[in-house]
Image (cartoon, rainbow, N blue to C red; front, side, top):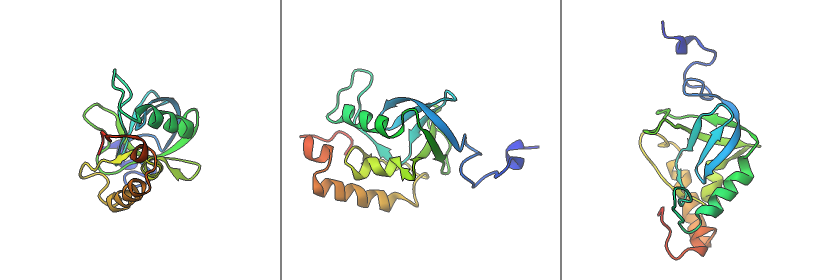
Length: 153
């Protein structure tokens, strides 16, 4: 018997088939990845921020990591998942929400992240995120106004 099918909510709720529905962020790895108090790492769906780890120092990478930290570090977040639960590195793939703010989308809207669509995840939200990126770019928000070259574009 598949126990996932009998857990409360099963598939299609706030994400229990993939991982926790909520947790506290214990560490911010970079602008688009966090570690939960459970020890699990979460890679944000539909976004890519400039790199700031492993010796990389892309323009706006540290700013993206700092902004992400300001939003989620030591805070309880809600997690929701799409079709694929993990990436090739074993990180959970999720939309992260804190105080009613979807952090993934906020990063794009404020110019800290580019849209990164990897099918099948994000198909239903792709247009909304691309519109947010277009607006951020047009308004020169964040990296769009600060960087000569945007590495995630």
